[in-house]
Length: 501
Image (cartoon, rainbow, N blue to C red; front, side, top):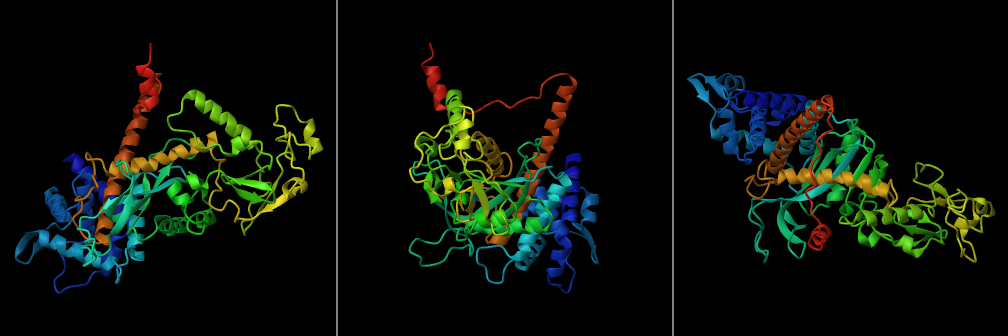
C-alpha cells in the first residue's frame, strides 16, 4: 500500500508541475452533464500503469484507478457521488475522455508529425519529471532515434488500400539479421538523454525530451525544433552527442542549426565523410579539421579505434592521433556571427619544424619535421593566417579532433542513449515492442510513450540515488565504490583463452 501511495504522490507532483491538465481540460467540449473523469485523473492512471510495468492499454488504466485506496478514489473522483448515489468510474468513461484528449491534441489534417500543442504537452511532461526527480547538473545531451512499431496492420504491397494507422509509415531499422537492415511499419522515436559533462560528476541519465514522427519525416531535421524549444525555455545546451546517422545529413539539416543554438557537436563520422576531402588555400580538409599540405598520408587515413582493440593497439593509435595533431591548423579566433574564423600554419604556432618557417627550425627535435615541403607553397604556408568559411568542414567540424583519444573518451558518453532505448525494450520493465499499445495514430501513442519514459526516469533516478547512498556507505567504511563488472567478451578474449598454454 505504501508503494502505491508513493507512486501516486509522485505522479501527481509531476502532473501538477507540468501544468498541462488544466490546459487540456479547457480544450475539451463541455457536455450537458459534467464529466466524472478529469484529464488529471486520466493521466494519473496512465502513469500508474507505466510505473507498474504493464502494457499501455486503457483497460489497465481503468484497473489501476479502481485499485487505489478508497480515499484516493474519492479525491480523484474515481468514486464520485451522483444524484442517484455513489458511482464508480467505468471503462467507457475512460475511453470517452481519452478520445476527446487525443482529438484536442491532434492536427486537423494528420501528416505524421506531432502538432505544436502535442509537442508542448510532451515537453512539459518530460521536463516536469526531471524537475521533480532533480535536475542533473549537466548541459550535455545524447540524441538518438529508434523504431517504434505500430500495432496496426501495414498496407498491402500492391497499394490497393492505405494502412489502418493513418500516420504510421515504412521505415528502416538495424537488426541482428545478416542483412543488418530491415523494414518496419510504425514511427521513429527520438530521445534527448542527459549525460555527464566531460569533467563533471556522474548524473542520473534522465530523458529530457522526446519526439515521435512517421519515418517519412527525417529524424535529424525533426529534432532541431525540439532543441530550439529547449533553448527558449532557458535550458543551456552544451555538448550534443550523436552518431553518424545525424552527422551524415546535409549541414543545413542538422549541423548548421545545431551549432547556431550553441551546441558543441561530438559526433561519429560516416565512412564516406572520413579521410581527405579536398583542400582550402592548400590546407588539407580531413575529418573536420585543416592540416598542413605535407601531412603524412598514413596519418590522414587514420580511422577510429576498433571496439575490440587491445591495450597495445590503443597506445599506438593514440600516439598516431597525437602526432597528427601537430600538423593541424588551429583556429586563432572564434567564429564570428557569420561562422567565419581564422587559422594559422602549425609551424608558426610552434607545433612542427618546417623550412618555409625558418623560426620553427629552432624548435626542439621532438617536434615533427617537414622533410619534403611543397615546392610552390600555397596560401596556408605563405600567409600568416587564412580565413576559414563555415562551408569548410560543414558536416564534420566538431569539438574534438577525430579520431583522437579525447574524442573517443567524450563520445563514449553517447552510450547513455543506447541504454535509454534498451530500457524501453526490456521485458522486465516497459517493453515497447509491438502490442504494448493497441492505439492507432500518432497522438495516443505519443502520450503513452511519454508516460513510459517518465516511469523510466523515475526508476533511473531511484537507482542512481540508491547507488550513490551505497557508495557513500562504502566510503564511510573506508572501502572503494563498487564498480560494475565488464560483461562484454570479445573475439580476441576468446581466442587468447583458447590458445593459452
